[in-house]
Image (tube, rainbow, N blue to C red; front, side, top):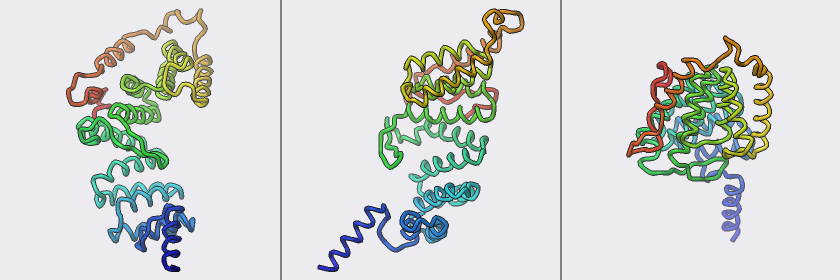
Length: 291
């Protein structure tokens, strides 16, 4: 009776603390991470799990998350590059997501762009969804279904953000417009408006911000979105010339460059591909956007 009670208590402990059962190095690492709250000790045990072949998929991912919390970002990036070959094919996508967060934190924009283009290729080639219309994703411990279009738009949104960090607002604009064609939302709309403001295309930016304010996009009612719109409008008002100056020679922005860019956008209309009707491979944009 006493043994049964101890066993039940032990099982309850694992459930409450979300610690796997067992006594291997991975279990010890999770115990150090979640119960003892000793992240440095957890990393030592995670390394032992990886080297010993104990739940390597989870050990590598969890170790890099802990390293990020300890601001050991560069070490975590190197760990993924060096040891992801030991992990299963099923673990590669989650490792990519962890790696992307690490690259963002470390400011490695070019590596972010390369990784995101690789993810777009994988979606286009049907590797991510395995021919299915949706896949199961996880966020904050909850599972939910994601469609091909939603995932494509999400990755494009991240790619657009990366180009914004480089200050390449023309490339970011093209990508955000493509993402909005596939799965529009208020966050990408605000980022697109920001790109237009940076190119002094104020009327286009104002029209987009007005649409967000009128709740014409998903997520427009979020207070953070409202604040973002207000900030962008303030920036827009501070930059845009008064109406009586806008038509003076030298200030007209509707030139051949803008027309050429619009032709490029029109060329990106959704294809009639029977394989993935919501996605076609990104066209070459001055050799920057080739996937």
